[in-house]
Image (cartoon, rainbow, N blue to C red):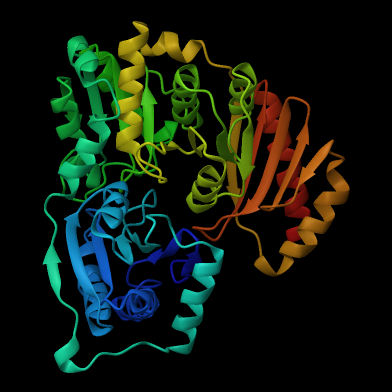
Length: 459
């Protein structure tokens, strides 16, 4: 990974602070985004309202000032939520009827990274079309500057987290969950989850065992909620005899689950559990991305429901969900989208839904997990020269001999009961290789084969 490389994609503008991502760059991007939002505001004749929030990273306060300056300079009235979960910010866009929002967070990346995530008035991320317009503004430096007496204003919204909690609590059976008095271990990795999830659990009458729920931004482990980062949570669940354990990434749009036996269910299975429960209650379309487990197809088939797959990225899944009126969707990284709350990944809403599933079923988390269709998924990364990417894609198409090939996002080769997906990362300078099969050895073999081929092409 190159520390001076800035990553720009539908997921946002992301980089290592001080080398790739600097206050000067943040100011320029904020001016471009303020100008972009001002175009939307001009349609209504009003000054654009733009929301702002951040996670707990030490660099967040510095970048906040740069972003504020850029937005105020382009006549935007900024409503600052302070430290808040990204799904809280997305929900607040709709409440304020704002033209957009900026989340200062690098989500699952390590502490030296930060990012600006950009949103539309509907609460979703910028899509390819919007993103292209925004980046053209940035490249041309065609910023909509303001006169000294027309500068934007700054106000605070201290009720956004409360509104988000209220929204979640109207959509789950609060009384039933309270009756169970669940013992819940929670790891927020000292990220933004600390401002909302402990509150939710207490309001649901849970006995909370918090670990890393301070707002220091001092990450005790990598904030990505994958199995290898859940060791402390697994130990805590077993030591305290908890009914379930939950872990968030730094901006709380994802959730990972640990069973009562101290075993992680796997990041894909947060979505699988949520889907199993939602489809049992309400049949309807399901949407997920190309890299998510085929257990989702099995569940859709079991309930006689359609499943739609999209390229990677929250916005691609969200837009498809809205288009087909899906009842549930998300990505296989612990990102669950519940349209009854909003068309955005919401780790807090997903956590509440899983607690309702536990309360309704009368079963343990390990029992619910054991009922799911189960496959073995393996995820690898490798560095690869960008200039040889096209050659690699051409070679792999000839090499794979798959029953089906999906080229909407990199290359996904599909055979009966197994698949491998090779794609360039949108958030880091890497190629991702994801494979799934009925056994770990089969999934590893698929990854090994593709990686060996890519290494030959790269040489």
